[in-house]
Length: 115
Length: 126
Image (tube, rainbow over all chains, first blue to last red; front, side, top):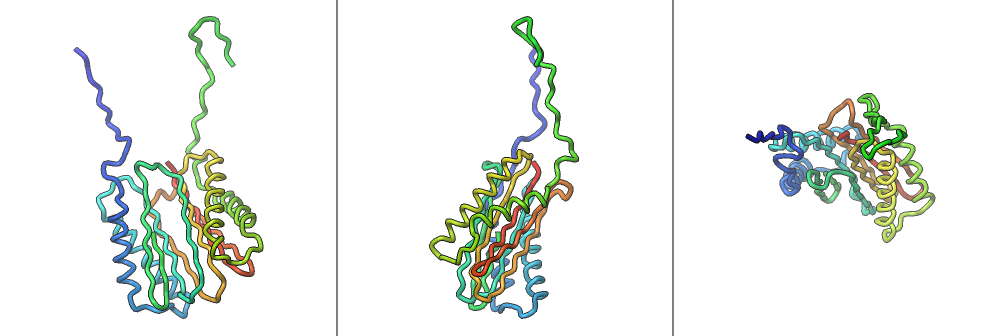
């Protein structure tokens, strides 16, 4: 009688990271935190704005049903003065399991990118 | 190398497993790599809208290449922001959910007379 051995470890995530869900979360967070805001004069205020945004996004991502995933949330926030900005991102990861989601927000005084 | 007297030979050399203490994110090494690459790509260039995407791609590709050449068991995420100097303010922040003992990040700020370049590297142990 042949005995079949079943593996007890998983080689991939049961539920994959969906960028569209994450984009929705980021978009909503940026809108709720930055609508109607102007660029803060004091550096400490800018720091607390951004820490707040980054923590909120991370908390919302952790509430998604994703096991064994690590998260990195980066927020770039600046004054809208007509200057040019270019942001690029390159990653070295597992193409099947890993992914990224970036969203941007802009109003008269500030711009913000989060991903 | 071992000598074989028959068709089947046993190789007694064993691969040294990577010790757990060696798997840490070396921020200094990464800082050095990033500074060198940004200096080489941007140097004394002034902000040119048509060149920025090319510079940004060059910097990112070069950094990833150098990081993967270190052969460490890490996944990397590298972001690069290039901004024109017009007196406007720029802030970056990041929040991460990872393993504190093995994972790490570093941010390198570089500037010349015409532009700022902010590069962030995140390393996640596999």
